[in-house]
Length: 92
Image (cartoon, rainbow, N blue to C red; front, side, top):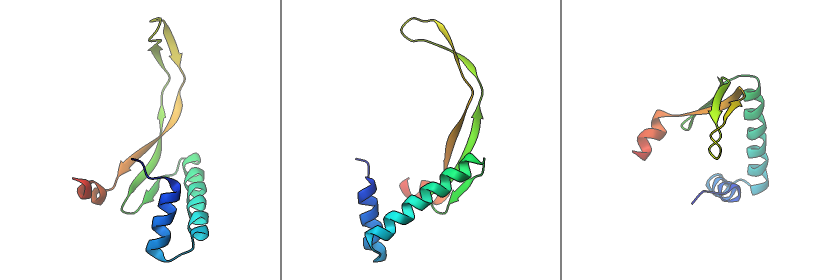
């Protein structure tokens, strides 16, 4: 089961003895900072968690699974996540 935003806020607030409103504001600000950095093609390293970066996916030809017809898939930027070694080691 996935952890919800409210569960994450509660866990952080309990672990740090900070008010939930403060933790919520920090998480929202973190989201904005990460979004802005990725829009500018920057890399974000979250210590102990991993790295977020963008890469370009070129245009390509795909197939419609229902009809089998060829379709053009446009080029786009995608977000890639590379887990930190410490996190990978912790779950294995």
